Amino acid sequence: MSVQDLIAPVSDKLTPTERRIAGVVLHDPTVLAFGTVSELAERAETSKPSIVRFAAKLGFDGFTDLQKWIRDELTQQLASPSQRIRHRDESGTAARDSITDSVNHTIAMLNKDRLIALAKPIADANRVWIISGETSMAGAVVLHSGLSMIRPDVSLVDDHSTGRELCSAEPSDAAVVFDFARYRRNSITAAQKLDDLGVPIVAITDSPLSPLASIARAWCELDIPAVGPFDSSIPAVLTAELLVSQVVDLLGDRARDQIDRLESFWQTTGVFLSYTPRSNRKP
Amino acid sequence: MSVQDLIAPVSDKLTPTERRIAGVVLHDPTVLAFGTVSELAERAETSKPSIVRFAAKLGFDGFTDLQKWIRDELTQQLASPSQRIRHRDESGTAARDSITDSVNHTIAMLNKDRLIALAKPIADANRVWIISGETSMAGAVVLHSGLSMIRPDVSLVDDHSTGRELCSAEPSDAAVVFDFARYRRNSITAAQKLDDLGVPIVAITDSPLSPLASIARAWCELDIPAVGPFDSSIPAVLTAELLVSQVVDLLGDRARDQIDRLESFWQTTGVFLSYTPRSNRKP
DNA sequence: TAGTCAGTGTACCGCTAGTTACAGTTTCTG
DNA sequence: CAGAAACTGTAACTAGCGGTACACTGACTA
Image (cartoon, rainbow over all chains, first blue to last red):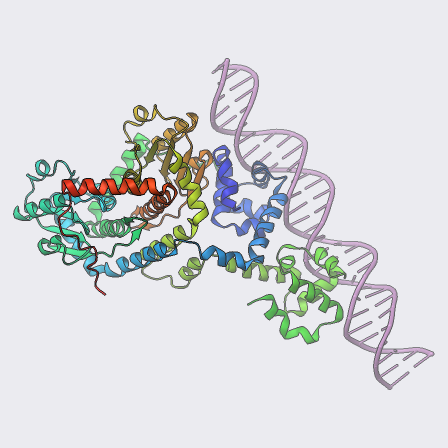
């Protein structure tokens, strides 16, 4: 049982101050184990009694009691190195290893130069079209969501209305096409159509043999691991995120302005729970 | 550096009482970390001053100083390996490191037991509802796509029609809710509504302080790194994929049949290009 | 045997710990 | 808009902390 499991069940019953305390504790549990009430109070920018009340709310009989509990937990954890070993050799290790491998591979491959080559057409484009098959849909969603926040005219092209949407594409646009082994007929034909229209294509695929690689202005090859019976979307998502980040760099202030504007829009419409009660502090 | 290394060099200069103290400390180092002078004195069947003198002989400026030292050692030992590494090379590739860190963390956290706890409600459910904010949309998409291939009645609830869609939910269903810091008001209220209806909730969130953690049947905490100006979806996607894979395990043949059926459907409708170079990864 | 000295425990000091009572402030609520 | 309820900090209390001065003990020395 961890500190997290201790706090989670009551997290909705916490007052703002207590939530702040919880934040500190979760960020660095050692203050609970080694620290004092005063120290924790200072770190959470509150008073000592609030710490005690926090402990009480977690079901303990004062801070001392809470500290005793976490110390016992720690003692147990330190006492049995066997547990750490057992923790490691879970089943399904193979799938997990192949994922970390794939992530490392993707990161290594998308170095600055290549990333810029991929991002440049997107940053320069008038409009951006995103096309994707099923496996890579997550990557496409991320790219769409990310790009939409930093520039206008980004479309995620629906599988069923490809033709209708794409017919207005122009050479000043750009298209990002995701597709992996068992290439979707739909995605490929759409890409070819765009190529015919003179639209520069950025391809995210899994092999230089992919039909996409040949028509793309810039492309990158990803190594796709399997998770259970399905192919993983992780490499595609990761690529999309790095791509967005690079486009932000290329667009510079233009992107930043857009983000700010979006932010203020969110603020006024209140889409988020505004959990930042940082303001009830007294000097 | 351990307690042993600390005591060894001076062990021949220790008086009988001090040797007894050393014995206690070596046998259970936690009394040093968590205990008090009085407690240690009692355990070693000696007096408080002898404890202080013992600390002095080890080169410390009193017991407090010795305790501070061992607490620092323990803190280091408890810190995650990734944190230790990051501490070392502060420079450059921060975003990439934080991603691999996050992936490792996610994989480590989603061990078999926790994964089963999360997957069980989904496997058992009559219908499955998926709710998500923007940041985690990719994870939701992957989960929806994956689950749809192995079981019927999986819905990705649209942000704008939450009420209409969810009103038919029942206790025999299950809901998977993704949400991360700056919790979407919409997602949270939807989750609360489902909880009111008696629907078991599986929460994928980023903190035990999330409003979700308290109402969830099962939940897991993800560590979300930043890529450029935005939060990464990788942990959410990874979790979704592992979850799908676990549900496949739980459902067994039922899932496999469904996959086969879908496969033959694809075959006959020809959504894929005919060649399937599944194995053209270079050696 | 008297003196020395390292080893040890007793008694006490100052301080800071955790706790509690209470009062001020804000936020619901009818 | 009044009253209640909830929240949070101030101030004061007590207990127990770590540390130190000093006295006692017993072995060794001159």
